[in-house]
Amino acid sequence: MNELTPEDRIALANAPPDIITMEELMNAVEVVRQKEDRDRASTNSFLGQTTSSLREPLLRWAGVGFPDAYMLTSVELTPPSKCSDGVVRNMVDYVLYLTGKTIQDWFVEINTKVSGLRLEPSLPIGSIQMWVYKRA
Image (cartoon, rainbow, N blue to C red; front, top):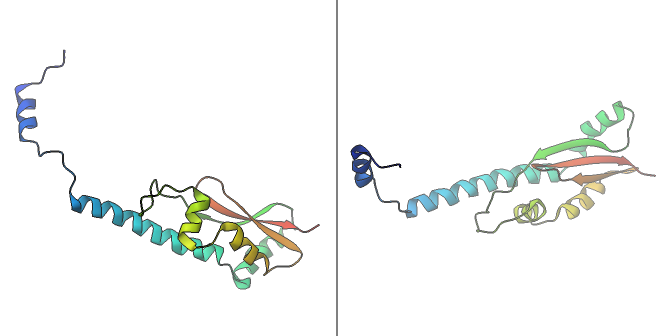
């Protein structure tokens, strides 16, 4: 049997009570808020592509012969287990929460900046990818 030694009993008797403090809760929420702020900035930057920011990756695509289904660029993004408002969100809902727009709305806007091709999102675990396709 696993009996406590006298030293273990003393250590247990002197251990602080297992309590949750307001400071602990505030720190935990603040860490999530900071992550959301970083994610918001990187997501807005990635999804808010300009013609200038699209030019270089599109030239790389051109340089490899315009293959269909070419990954143009990506951004790492993983929703927290719970957002700072206490809600659990999947990737699609997390982007909406961070930016106020759906991924599809972002890509409708991005596609107004190109002609003869289309840009589409892909959502593998932990990132958002932007793929380019030749228009048929």
